[in-house]
Length: 243
Image (cartoon, rainbow, N blue to C red; front, top):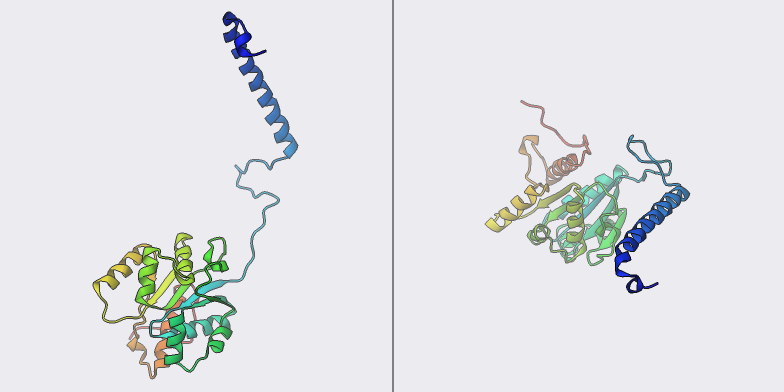
């Protein structure tokens, strides 16, 4: 019967009756369906559900090499992580490749063989472009001023900056090794802003207290200190023990 066909003096009672009836049906429906679904009990006690599983994965570090000078640092980081059986995900910019060819004797094949996985900087669909892909941090070594500025602004034009942006938003360790001198006010402001976001700024400053005998000694010390920031402590370089 349409609501308008009900006498006006009965409409209020009819509405109330319908409301009570619907509420009773809803109660019965949810009570029955919740029981049938056999939902897990409340987790108020802090106990894990029986169907919960913990993801087991290897330790992973994302490594990015940009076009700044100092490619040897990035290559050595990859070599050290490979010796430790730590999974590495490498991104190299086109200028990173150009600088490597100019500054070192390494080939692209040598570089790729040092990493577990290699991605094109244009491949923004790679696993490391998503926060759901779990890893233990990212190292941009060396880090050009262009990449530094892009990370600060969230300008994710390529996989390097996208991976760094994801690392930031997921509150994971991000370390950049800026290679420029002298530094302009813009460079310093970019570094300060990133430092306030929790990024580790690691200029590759030589530690002369180690009395380095070669460039390789300086590289070893810098790379060892970089890995210290990720809780990876090696004994292949001299550490300060006082006078």
